[in-house]
Length: 122
Image (cartoon, rainbow, N blue to C red; front, top):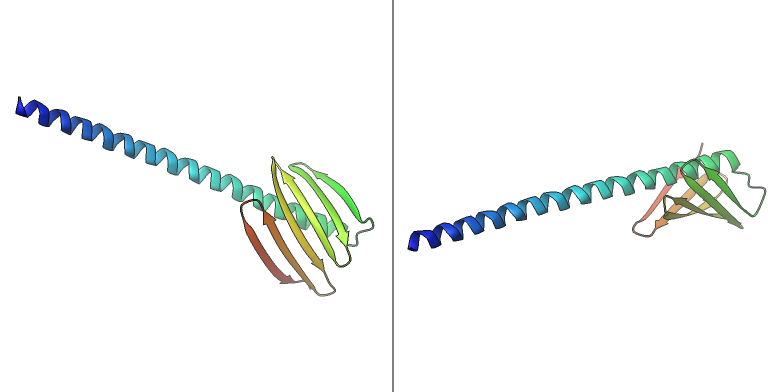
């Protein structure tokens, strides 16, 4: 009788450990795919912003909308700053771009991440 109880506990412990391992692997996979998807969307938004600025940098209108194949970009110009809002697959990225003569400073804020970058245009 004593051996059967020991085997039952061992089998239950083995099942618990196996279930925990499978759950952990699935959770890690889900996190990795979600992170990859969000990273791709962030870079798509940055590329769309850069393409828009290259094509339309001397902005004629104070505000407007620019549609592209992955989503929509809207902008609003205030003095020397352009606020750009990029919507891609339900996620919204907000950029604030300071327009100067030689230096362009860019700040991006999304719902989950904050990032800023500075570079010099030649």
